[in-house]
Image (cartoon, rainbow, N blue to C red; front, side):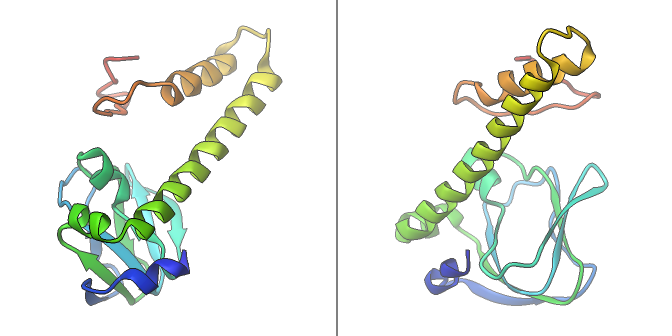
Length: 161
């Protein structure tokens, strides 16, 4: 993703002190962020689910592309430097190469999810227990029609499921 840095002309470069929240889960900002250097943590529901260290890593893309609130919190794990684009949609229209790189990233994530789904289905085929249900749930999520996405939780389930 380092190639994205070549397209970040016009982004606001910011130094982010350790512990600073860059993105807050549930907020809608319309912003896109690109890591220049440092280490960021992705936090979902209070749990760190990923650490981002690769220069050029993009943050906030799902919120921008789905026109929905951010799905996770991003916090600086160390002092970091980022580019911020306050009008992410305009940036992506002006930089189709970045949009293509993000599309490839999202396609890679989908590929990993479908590979995982196939593995779960093979492992638990015919068992009919609660573990087989995980495969069914993943399959239904991957095959959702392109509407507003609301993944839900145990407190607020997605009404389409």
